[in-house]
Length: 199
Image (cartoon, rainbow, N blue to C red; front, side, top):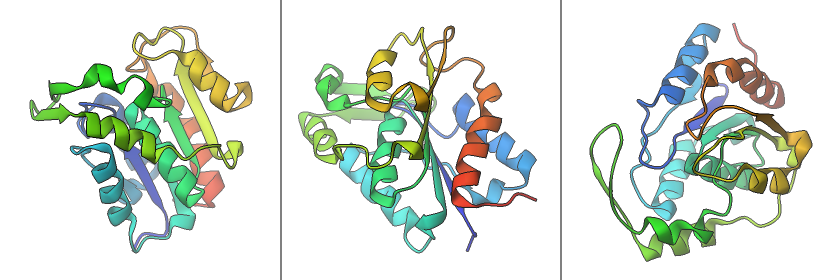
């Protein structure tokens, strides 16, 4: 069993083949810790996704868990971060997604696999039920936001987590342009908080 675990959670209709997921894997490989990194395919509704992630983490030392989450994956990352009191890096994260998820009800196609994914009203309710309330430890979070995010309002994340926890880039988009430049800081944040050593 690995000494520590890093978990990357992709966004809505994305996959482990996304550019950010692959860049994260490449950086972990460079550090010699690719075997510690999990990048699951999130193909189900919110409740089933969290259940599957908790099952994946079963038997692992969650005291040495670090999470990276992008967009809707950022919301899931925050849910797990609160449950396990684990450090998390959030990239243009969805904040309180149930407030606008009704706009996504219907059938969608995954950007990478073409797989059909249906969003239901039940999924909206599941997102609300997963909300963990107040943040227990703001210092467990580091956010990377790009002001020109065309999907999500960065001011919502800033309001929730505060200026001290957020690195805001004035350029970019929702996909987070030039994500590679943030990986050293993201990994340093996570690894330092879980006491992980790299070779």
